[in-house]
Structures are given as structure tokens and as C-alpha cells.
Length: 237
Image 1: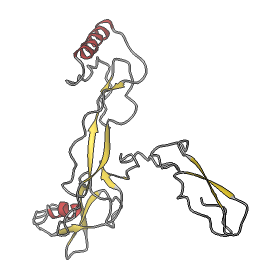
Image 2: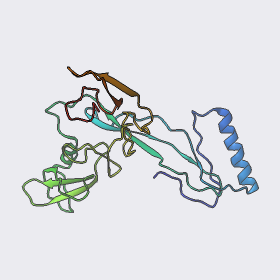
Image 3: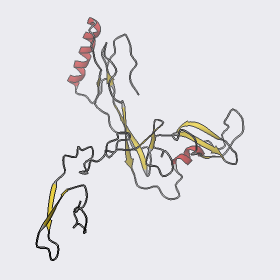
């Protein structure tokens, strides 16, 4: 997605104005030498640093922000590994109750416009029964057919009430890191992307009324609140 195509010629890398001048000069020098001397490299290319995040795709509620990077490849190198674009969830103040839903607004843009190769015009509302929920599927009001107008805009909810958002035609959910499609989850310690190795071991000692023998139970902080166990339970965890 967004990669430069393979070429047998010399590939001039992308130079960022934000990169240090010395770094850009070294890249340019290496490019000229490798092109002039026929030097070839092996393995994948290298990515430039990530660019800045764009503004949120929505003016209220949930939306999508995107950032991109470029692949630098010298002759003989393969495509860079990974994605050239990254999307994250952005959350703005809730939309007012009278605001038209984002998908409804996109369908309404085609109201009164000729479609389907005829001069007939229709009023369109979202249709959610189509196979691809990230296509702009709109139902002609008063008629028994719908039409797909291509992909919905990035940041459109996949379906009413769904947590996923459409990005580049795919329905993606945000991980705990806020990045759509990352799949990153919180571990049992409550740490995003953790390996369950950052929990604090907490031990609580208590005595029941009339019981002379203290009892102790251990919990891993972050898994559950520490409370006194009920009779017959295994402990406060």
C-alpha cells in the first residue's frame, strides 16, 4: 500500500526537508555512486521517519487521523516491510443530537442526481444489508433496490453502533494504543501491549470475627480489586 513499484533502473530515494542536511547529502551521494558504479544492494529498503498526524476526519464524535512514511530503495533492494500508512482513532466532543450521521450525509450527497445511466433521480438513505459494510451502499427511498457509490469516507462507522471504523475500504477496530487495526490489547496488569510481567504482587492479611488464626490471600494488582473474600470463596481475587 503506497509502495514504489519495482524498477530495473536507479531509484532515487525520498528526501525529507525535515531530515538533517548532512543525512540528505549522504543519501544523495550514495545514490549517485551506486547508480554510476552499478552497485546493487540486497534485502529490503528502509523507511523514512513517520510524518505528522493529519487532522481528525470528523468535526465531532469519532474520526480517523493518518500519518505516512516513504520507502527508500536502492538498486537491487526489495520493497520495505510494513505499511506506508498508519491510522489512529481520534475522539472529539460528541455530535449534537440533530446532526446527520456521517453515512447518511454521504448518501444524501447523491439526492436529485441522475445515476444508473438514466436521467431518473432518487432520494438515498443508507442500506446496511450489503456484503461490504465499508462501501457506500444507499437505498433508493420508495424503491426496492440499492446502489453502491464506492467506498465510504475514512472514519465512517462500519455499522450503526459498531466500534469499528472504515479505513481504505476495510472495517478496523482500534487497539488499546489507539491505532486502528493494530490488535494491541491490555494485559492482565492493565498495561497496553504488556506481557503480564509488570503486575505488583499484593498480599492482604485479615482475621474473621471469632477466628484466632489470621488468613492471607495474594492478588496480582490490576487483575481485580482487593476485597475481603466471602465464605466459601478462594480469595479476594
